[in-house]
View 1 (cartoon, rainbow, N blue to C red):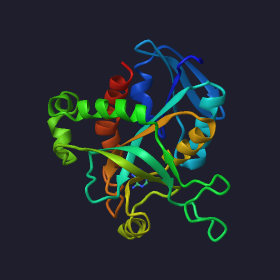
View 2 (view 1 turned 135 degrees about the vertical axis):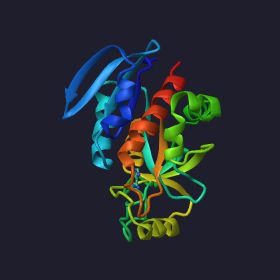
View 3 (view 1 turned 180 degrees about the horizontal axis):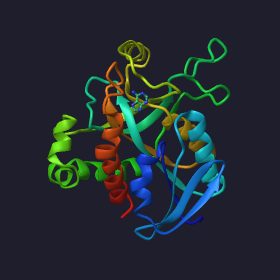
Length: 252
Ligand code: ADE
């Protein structure tokens, strides 16, 4: 059996810098304009990288993790815009399945289906989902949350009793910044909980190589006309802290 090596990915540096700082025996490797950090986290071999934004960037990065760094499982962590009305800023969405909401090769292939793969939905690994669920519920427990994020910041982003949701995540090369675009997506794919720009691309590559994966997303905005407000500050004060705590809790 091959040695267990966990790939940890985010889209932007602020989403994974905190995790990079946790590594011992850290080494940096540059391939294809990406910086891969190998090292150990609680004695577990890991490789941490940020892909940059979008499906192509994410797909090339996860391919390198699989082919060059021989990862045996993948965890993606980052932010997303809330789509479903139950999903609020500060909540966490675990992707049980992922879909590319901008894939449409109809009438040659059914809408959303990846041509010649015969699939539109990519399922996360149930065992990893279970471990991540425990780790996330532990973080969202009131005392834990207040230990790692100040009352002031929780109030600033109106985060009170944040919830975990497990379900469908939609990915595409589009930042949702208007209510009109959000409503159109809600009509086409009503079961989508949140949107981001990498998860389903990562999921497709992992599926094709047989690598188990999970996608963990903190809701940073409501994917509507106000979605860019406080975006960077949210990542720094909330989602970056969530990522560190969840990863530490998953890899113990
Ligand atoms: N990631 C975080 N917020 C997003 C949004 N509104 N649209 C797409 N990706 C996002």
